[in-house]
Image 1 (cartoon, rainbow, N blue to C red):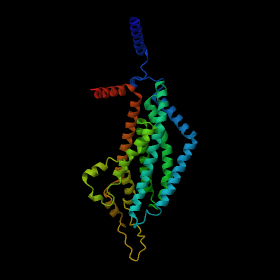
Image 2: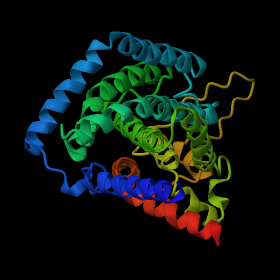
Image 3: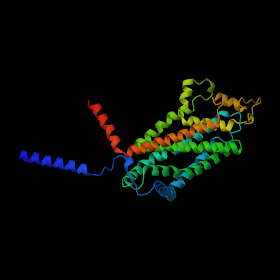
Image 4: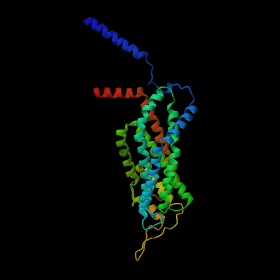
Length: 333
């Protein structure tokens, strides 16, 4: 009986090994996968599908529109007519900070909560050779840009007018451009987190990542010229800092006229009637809006590339299994 049992066990083991050996390497190297259509065809079909899906999901689209309108009205009401008021300069700085925070949290959390569910569908369609990762990721990126621009412009138009910011076309275009790029960067960060973690963990990791980014961005308010060099270097790693500096310099630099001193005391005095004084105390004097925008574009590219490789890593179990095996060996020894 013992011999029979060992024989059956050996046959079962060898049969199992043969079965595993003859199974297709579905989870092998992503580069070896072949697809029946070209990259351009895959991209075009996927882009059309994603745009149709976005507009068919009318409930989510209407919620996004109402969210931007309602939030714009709230922010505009809080910072009503502070844009040209020299007696409330730091309130206008807080206005810029609130706008940047709105775009960061709004566009980070959506992919953090939605992408983990989409990854299941992506895994099935990708390993069935429907399309490649590059085509999917590029179409995913491009399909959200039109609605992001439209929704961002709605919010910008509301808050810019209600806050009584300078009615100059150049400043408004720069203001909108920085906010659009901030929204796309935040979405890229959300995609990176959503691909890496599930919904539960992503909901925790997302705010945990955004909190230090925000704290570093607003450091130095009121004593900007006395910021330590090491801290100034660290602040450059926050894309929110670049966006905040870009918004403030858009509103206060480039020949901004003297602001109105709306101090109704018997002896009115406004220390920050000259916009350059505020830029000095915020540590933003000499900063160029164009340089901040270039830095933001760099972060946009960085997060999108990292998110692509994170998605590729999630769908390639061979490399992940090797890493887990090495970790297991280290713990075992």
